[in-house]
Length: 311
Image 1 (cartoon, rainbow, N blue to C red):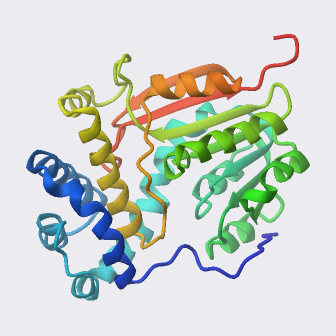
Image 2: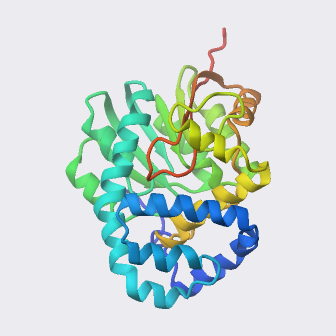
């Protein structure tokens, strides 16, 4: 059963709040080169996901001066239809099934940290490799009840705040912890705090599977090497700005979620150093690259392990 400690909605924000959020990102749109690249990639991605030409033509050329209220009055129904009809339940689920779940070792208990609507938790529950899945978030989500109804004996969801996060991990003692697109929504000190809390409270031999937006400056892209080569023509700061714009579009604009976007993206090499300094063994790493036209940010995947006392 889902346990919640707050009556807050699922990060909902209104049109006025969206406008306030946008002011933070307008300076990122000052570079014509960055904007032209983002517009090209967004047009490809949003069209592939299922958005109409009218939607793309109204939104993409007007990133820096969009009238939110008028736009949403015209396209809200389409946004909801695409997001809930094809992208989240089909394309996002397909991506998890093909690229993420095979890297999660069979286990008795998986803890899905920052579980969102429960898309990954639902897929894990349908597999015979996992006995129990627990999803946790900072706020509750209405979609949880549907997942619980379908898998009442395998899935639980909890609202877990910062002050109880370490004790929550210790109490449930998961074999595997999974974070998909979570860490880059935290400031760098918070990233360190959460990863250190996990390391200190999880058992030796437990695994952590992490999916993030970001690229490798050393490895070749498994998928979309041409996309990688083009992306690398931009400076480090420009790449950070591009990923931030994508996050703003996906979270604030299309999903209307008050999601923090501190732009704390790291390369695979930076993550590897970060995880090693905390004490994790890096069992495997993949520079997935650009796996789908619907995922326009480069993708990186790590499998970590807390070493035993004799390792």
